[in-house]
Image 1: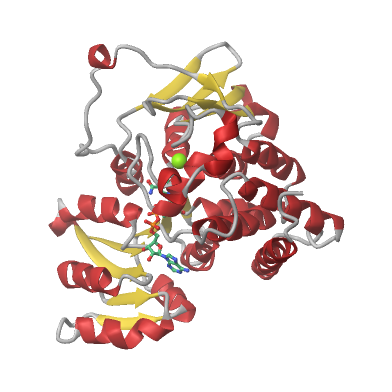
Image 2: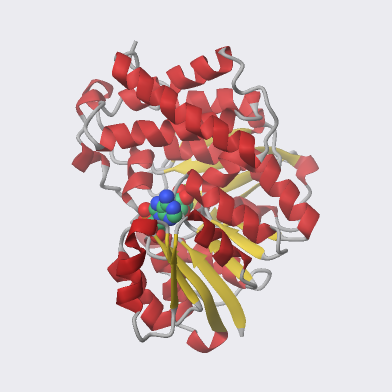
Length: 391
Ligand code: NAD
Ligand code: MG
């Protein structure tokens, strides 16, 4: 029986992961489940999957979680220390599916135990790629990508050397506004940005898909995880989301990974790796599909992509600054404090300020990443107060 823990169990990736586990209940023992503010859902999942422990990220919700788990035999805990303690519990496979930079510390802790970490939390790699990879190497741990594009690249690279790789092309659906005229984007509402044409995901990553901040994170994630030079990494808009990524080799051959837009593929691939096992995802019918289309990922429409290029070139702590500023800009957009198009302006301003002040000069340690994450958020807030985000 494999021991598994799921960090971010109450989210969209958590749902898909538990769907796969549920189909093979005898194959797995769930060690820890974690969530945020949705205590009822966390408790319901804990009663169903009987982990040793259920953890909410929020200490003020502990009493509620305890009450909801009364008599279940599942221990309740809360807060960031409890998340780390949950990551210390021996498990063979750990899903890292907390959203945002908050996913970094538990993932890093899990790697110290030499576990296999299925990494949906792309922010970990964006903020601290070298630290994550080095920690995994030092402790003999394995990181498996769960982002669909990166799972696709990973699969396309199986048995291949990096030397012959000319280009890695990750696809983007183009998000909610791919067909909108540019001048309308500034007026985009929260509701409009929160609906995705192809994928069913959490709200934050759905908005990040509309702004392409998600793709920007993924470009950086590609560089960090696979060690591929930034100039070899491209994004292309592919509205059907059937091809997830392509790896182009120096002999002119291109290996593409195709599949229905369903995260259970990438999650299941990481769950069963290095084997392949049957998964409950739709099979493609090419005749029904008819055609696949592609468009350029335009940096005028999607300034986040241009910022990602700068971050990839600069490396070091720029990723942590980019992610922290992006998370805060997204908070401000969700709260109605800035326009959709002002998110990129805000992130750009923060990167400029922090790089200019020398704040990004240190090495990629957990302490430095935390410091930069914090000042990136504060600088974003200051830009909001001064109204300078859009200047
Ligand atoms: P979600 O918002 O649906 O779920 C996030 C989970 O994290 C929830 O369990 C929530 O309770 C928990 N959480 C939120 N804030 C937290 C905090 N501060 N501390 C601890 N836990 C917290 O998000 P999602 O769409 O499932 O995405 C999860 C991760 O997977 C993200 O990094 C995202 O970029 C990545 N990802 C998601 C998809 C997708 O299809 N949803 C695809 C690729 C990658
Ligand atoms: Mg993705």
